[in-house]
Length: 107
Image 1: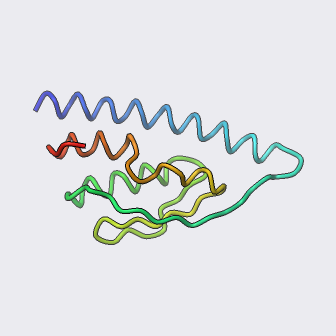
Image 2: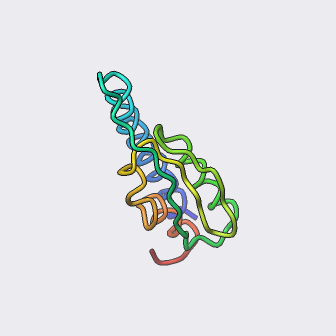
Protein backbone atom coordinates (compact mmCIF):
# COMPACT_ATOMS: atom_id res chain seq x y z
CA UNK A 1 0.00 0.00 0.00
CA UNK A 2 2.82 2.42 0.87
CA UNK A 3 4.41 1.76 -2.52
CA UNK A 4 1.20 2.66 -4.31
CA UNK A 5 1.02 5.93 -2.39
CA UNK A 6 4.65 6.65 -3.29
CA UNK A 7 3.96 5.93 -6.98
CA UNK A 8 0.81 8.07 -6.88
CA UNK A 9 2.83 10.99 -5.47
CA UNK A 10 5.49 10.43 -8.14
CA UNK A 11 2.74 10.48 -10.77
CA UNK A 12 1.28 13.77 -9.53
CA UNK A 13 4.73 15.40 -9.51
CA UNK A 14 5.43 14.15 -13.05
CA UNK A 15 2.02 15.38 -14.21
CA UNK A 16 2.58 18.86 -12.78
CA UNK A 17 6.02 19.02 -14.41
CA UNK A 18 4.63 17.95 -17.79
CA UNK A 19 1.70 20.39 -17.58
CA UNK A 20 4.09 23.29 -16.93
CA UNK A 21 6.41 22.22 -19.77
CA UNK A 22 3.48 21.82 -22.16
CA UNK A 23 2.08 25.21 -21.15
CA UNK A 24 5.40 26.83 -22.06
CA UNK A 25 5.50 24.99 -25.40
CA UNK A 26 1.94 25.98 -26.30
CA UNK A 27 2.51 29.58 -25.17
CA UNK A 28 5.50 29.79 -27.50
CA UNK A 29 3.35 28.57 -30.39
CA UNK A 30 0.52 30.98 -29.62
CA UNK A 31 2.79 33.97 -29.11
CA UNK A 32 4.97 33.34 -32.17
CA UNK A 33 4.36 35.32 -35.33
CA UNK A 34 3.85 32.33 -37.60
CA UNK A 35 1.79 30.00 -35.32
CA UNK A 36 3.79 26.93 -36.33
CA UNK A 37 1.27 24.12 -35.83
CA UNK A 38 1.13 20.72 -37.48
CA UNK A 39 -1.97 19.04 -36.04
CA UNK A 40 -1.92 15.27 -35.92
CA UNK A 41 -4.05 12.45 -34.64
CA UNK A 42 -2.05 9.60 -33.14
CA UNK A 43 -3.09 6.24 -31.75
CA UNK A 44 -1.36 3.97 -29.29
CA UNK A 45 -2.17 1.01 -27.08
CA UNK A 46 -1.69 0.90 -23.35
CA UNK A 47 -0.76 -2.15 -21.29
CA UNK A 48 -2.96 -0.96 -18.42
CA UNK A 49 -5.76 -3.36 -17.44
CA UNK A 50 -7.67 -1.23 -14.94
CA UNK A 51 -10.38 0.99 -16.42
CA UNK A 52 -9.77 3.48 -13.62
CA UNK A 53 -6.06 3.81 -14.41
CA UNK A 54 -6.79 3.93 -18.15
CA UNK A 55 -9.07 6.87 -17.44
CA UNK A 56 -6.38 8.53 -15.30
CA UNK A 57 -3.98 8.24 -18.26
CA UNK A 58 -6.54 9.65 -20.71
CA UNK A 59 -7.31 12.58 -18.41
CA UNK A 60 -3.61 13.27 -17.86
CA UNK A 61 -3.09 13.50 -21.61
CA UNK A 62 -6.05 15.88 -21.89
CA UNK A 63 -4.83 18.02 -18.97
CA UNK A 64 -1.52 18.53 -20.74
CA UNK A 65 -1.89 21.53 -23.08
CA UNK A 66 -1.48 20.72 -26.76
CA UNK A 67 -3.00 17.23 -26.52
CA UNK A 68 -6.50 15.90 -26.04
CA UNK A 69 -7.70 12.32 -25.80
CA UNK A 70 -10.52 11.99 -28.31
CA UNK A 71 -11.21 8.28 -27.93
CA UNK A 72 -10.33 5.44 -25.59
CA UNK A 73 -11.54 1.91 -26.23
CA UNK A 74 -10.20 -1.13 -24.36
CA UNK A 75 -6.68 0.22 -23.97
CA UNK A 76 -6.43 1.89 -27.38
CA UNK A 77 -6.14 5.67 -27.24
CA UNK A 78 -6.66 8.20 -30.00
CA UNK A 79 -5.14 11.59 -29.25
CA UNK A 80 -5.25 14.89 -31.14
CA UNK A 81 -2.01 16.85 -30.89
CA UNK A 82 -1.44 20.52 -31.69
CA UNK A 83 1.94 19.58 -33.14
CA UNK A 84 2.95 16.19 -34.45
CA UNK A 85 5.93 16.06 -32.09
CA UNK A 86 3.60 16.27 -29.07
CA UNK A 87 2.29 12.81 -29.98
CA UNK A 88 5.68 11.14 -29.94
CA UNK A 89 6.26 9.11 -26.85
CA UNK A 90 2.64 8.84 -25.75
CA UNK A 91 2.80 5.05 -25.96
CA UNK A 92 5.16 3.59 -23.34
CA UNK A 93 5.35 6.95 -21.59
CA UNK A 94 6.63 7.61 -18.10
CA UNK A 95 2.97 8.18 -17.13
CA UNK A 96 2.10 4.64 -18.18
CA UNK A 97 5.18 3.19 -16.45
CA UNK A 98 4.15 4.67 -13.11
CA UNK A 99 0.53 3.61 -13.55
CA UNK A 100 1.68 0.07 -14.35
CA UNK A 101 3.61 0.06 -11.05
CA UNK A 102 0.48 1.21 -9.24
CA UNK A 103 -1.45 -1.57 -10.96
CA UNK A 104 1.16 -4.05 -9.78
CA UNK A 105 2.60 -4.91 -13.19
CA UNK A 106 6.17 -4.53 -14.30
CA UNK A 107 6.63 -1.66 -16.78
